[in-house]
Length: 476
Image (tube, rainbow, N blue to C red):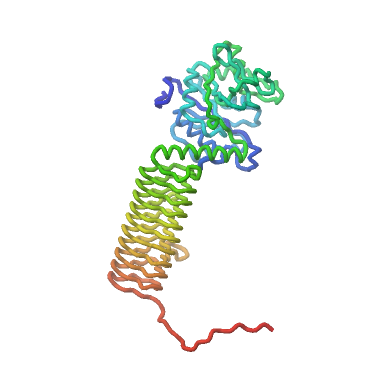
């Protein structure tokens, strides 16, 4: 039963059929067309997400070109909430033939919504309105009012408003060509009726294909009502057939994301220069400068400021933190956590497993990986902290590193609270620096150091008077 607030009042199950068999020749790519990405997700994944929003009972994906690859991609990123099945269309003999392949998976008691795997931005509320127009007993077409409908099939209506026919542009009379309402390729239809009409298809046409749109003719001939739900937002029904169209829809998608963020109070320096390729969630008073990219799951706390040209993936940024320009944060599977009030960058890199406490400072050209830094710890310049546990108020000097890899295994470095590590030091793990200690600049530390001590490990300085530099040998 449909329970979504935007859903029509119907108890009929919804089954979704997604046509995803095409090759996409104009994409000029070995990758199946429906696996090209918008907003960091495959075109087809967007359509599957829409099916989930409809609370569909089942989604049947019709595959053909690159079928194994497409099916594997769907299963790897399966959307919860409905059964997922596949039907292969081999060879591909038209849209009607495609939907025929899905019929064995469709029960007679539902409403079938037919979508395309390369049309990613159809809104769920639009489809709910289409399903409501169908009422569970009528063929309902999603149509579009276009200023210039050249090349599209026109919707011809009867005097009572029902759809009488879809007339292809090449077959249309001058009066019919003056119609601006066109068919989008999306429909909702009772499953039992769909099966009857598909059984009557033939390929007696110029293309020698079985057209799904022919069921309109059969429905009218049977005296059935064919209705249309008309929209004016072309983005919702725009498909991808070329890299140009892919880029256009990417921008349309990002505009929608940017508007949604701004309506929630996020300040964007330029909405046209934002890329969200995952799920970005923001608390109040977040500001984001230009050319930032967000991937995976990113949460920005209250008052967070993101500088220009940052790339942030799979991270939680605490309230009041400042991420300076050109910072790269990528948590991958382990995630990255930045504590409240921390200052990161510019030109910093936080890698998987970096967990920073409150008011931590990570400066320019500092890399942190699989390490925890407690409150107030600082590594302000040109440093590497890998597989380290860093205590409160530690100051990690410029040019210093934890040598965490011995060629076979990773080892951990423990730096206890209030330690000061001078510049250009190498801490060879496993090693522990005792609380409150100091490591003199240029030291290579291979053994644990006592709390409160000064540890220096470097060669004695030697000065040779009147030393002459070697001279270049003259060429013969």
